[in-house]
Amino acid sequence: MKEIEQRLTENGVRPTAMRMLIYKYLAQKDAAIALTDIENAFAKADRTTLFRTLKTFEQKGVVHQIDDGTGVQKYALCEPGCNCELEQDLHLHFHCTNCDETVCLTEHKIPHINLPEGYITEDANLVLKGICEKCSGQ
Amino acid sequence: MKEIEQRLTENGVRPTAMRMLIYKYLAQKDAAIALTDIENAFAKADRTTLFRTLKTFEQKGVVHQIDDGTGVQKYALCEPGCNCELEQDLHLHFHCTNCDETVCLTEHKIPHINLPEGYITEDANLVLKGICEKCSGQ
DNA sequence: ATAAGGATGCAACGGAAGTGCATTTATTGT
DNA sequence: ACAATAAATGCACTTCCGTTGCATCCTTAT
Ligand SMILES: [Mn+2]
Ligand SMILES: [Mn+2]
Ligand SMILES: [Zn+2]
Ligand SMILES: [Zn+2]
Image (cartoon, rainbow over all chains, first blue to last red):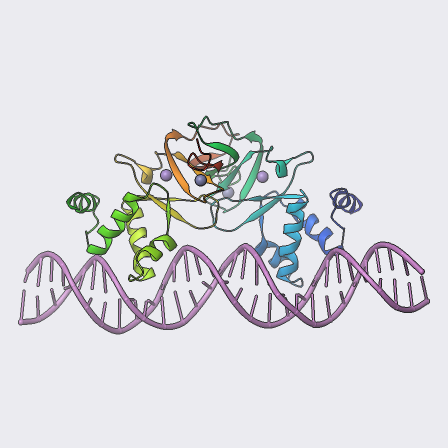
């Protein structure tokens, strides 16, 4: 718990009780988390607070947002040393169509694509979909 | 207009007046189209009809859906010979953060990614974001 | 002409993101 | 310790988009 407090402080996020709980919750999950998930896990807290906590985390580089194509925004903790706010940690994400979970594949970066003249690429999002390792029974 | 009728019929879509107009609208646009766009273009038609038309088109392989990360579903006509319903035409998409338009880059396929053991990839979505050729003034 | 099936229109629902404002809690200066 | 200030939280409400149920209209086949 002390480490969480420190981590938040380092990133310029004031470590309130709520925020540390949310951080802890994110840390113990290996899949990306939607606002609704947190809402269900913390029934007592207000949705707005959770929403704003995620936005604060995102802004301060504690989490990064993931668009996996399901239509709901998900979030995952940034790796230590991840510079996703600078759009330099373009790892890809995998969405399992069986268990509906999305995970970061931080080791797999998005390959560089050569576009025609005139296109200036500033960001990229690559989502692979299929069956995850848990569900494939492998 | 005759060609549109034929195209729809070929794909097993009954060519009603409304549907041909929507097809024509999609054909004359070079960017991906959201339901709201069509709604604005055809003020007289009902949202539901337009919605179901797009779903029918998608199901019959006339259009493919595009998730560009903006949170709104977009659609674009399938290239002749595109087998996107079989998930074999995995071209990438470019979303311009300046003009907010999204285009198909049908010539650029999503590169194959080697995943760890256990992951079975069945589909992929790659969206590049930045400045499009129109907006870069190039 | 009639029956059947498909297309369209109207109304309503639901999920999720987001905002304004009041209230509570923490921080700072005196 | 107290007042002033700022930040965090909670409540209510809104908007946007996708989606569904059901009634009606139109087209097609018998
Ligand atoms: Mn990630
Ligand atoms: Mn496309
Ligand atoms: Zn899975
Ligand atoms: Zn542009």
